[in-house]
Amino acid sequence: MSKSFKFITGVVLAAGKGVRMNSQLPKVLHKLCGLPLIYYPLSLLSSLHLKNIIVVLGHKKEEVKEEIVKEFKGINFACQRVLNGSAKALESALKYVDTPYLLVMCADSSFLDKKVFQKAISFHISKRNACTVLSRESSSPSSLGRIIRDSRNEILEIREEVDLDRKNMPSLKEVNAGIYIFNREELSKQIKKVKPHPKKKEYFLTDIIEIFRRKNYKVRAFKVGEREIFYSVNSLKDLIEAEKVVRTYLIEGLIDKGVRILDPQTTFLGPKTFIGKNSVIYPFTFLENNVKIGNSCGVGPFVHLREGTVIGDNSYIGNFTELVRTKLSSRVKMKHFGYLGDTEVGSKVNIGAGVVTANFDGKKKSKTKISDSAFIGSDTIIVAPVKIGKSAFTGAGSVITKDVEDKTLVVGVPAKKVREIKNV
Image (cartoon, rainbow, N blue to C red):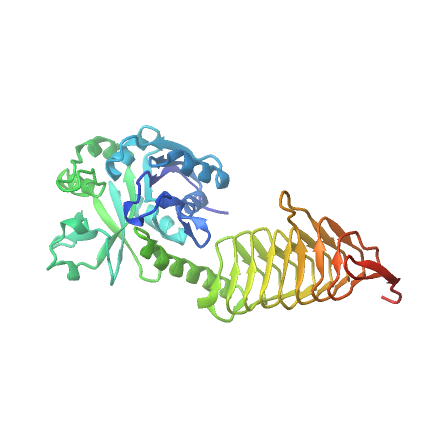
């Protein structure tokens, strides 16, 4: 049973424009392994079973909110009307917080293992901290804020890159992960004391650390080990690196569960890609979210399985094949190039090279059903909507425009019945 943290409110700061992304799309909606950036912190917070989760919206708030409610239920929203910094963003959410503790995250960075957060919460409470900052060592800190400590190794402040002395930058390897645990009472008293940055004119949440220290509030860092997977996105270049980090994490998880992935560098998938045990994924495969692959399957090379595709156990999908919204039962073979869209395929079906379901007539998409033990000849075009019966055969190059009866061979353009098939 998952541990519950009903005494904590989660807050995700998602109001900013993300200027460095150089994009019209809000930063938090940029896709990371096929899902918006905002998905990752919300998924983690949801798994912790907090009392409440609040997302602070601002830039293009309706667009962001619409994307969130598609995926998550019970999320509450606060609005930062003036986009003037992370401290003001958090302040806009505080009036909705009725728990003694807050877990605050930026929408563009996170660790991927919820155990990190569980340990950090326990650390915060056991040490009776007013604020716990999650930090990590980084050999390439880039634009992340640095943790500044005194001679006793206590945290003095978090200094943003814009305020760092260039001479000292190389020696400062401990960075702020952008994740905090606060006591609500102390935070409510002090957050209004954050002043605008002299250069940026924004109210930085990181300044609260120095304010807490002056009040003799307990501030500690929960330093996360190097093995814990972390990403942070401030630019499109960062997004490329984050994609590599998250994809590697997902692939290693699948390998640990008995999936063989021949070339992780050319295998692309998402958090909602499910692959069964003993399946083999060949190079240059793109497996979207909401794709399910059964046990003991072979997929690839050069395969694109799009959202809504299900591959049954002991099936094989070979090179240069695309499937979308298609369900294959067990023991289906489609070893060579082809396309199936909006198709239901029964068990023990063989689909020859070059087979295409023509599922779109320019106005609407229609469905195809291929029944058990059917044999679809090479270069068959199936014009949906149509049903191909059990143990039916189509000749090479046929164009199927009408339903095909069970145990029947059809051939031609358009395909016509040639004969019944016996002993199948």
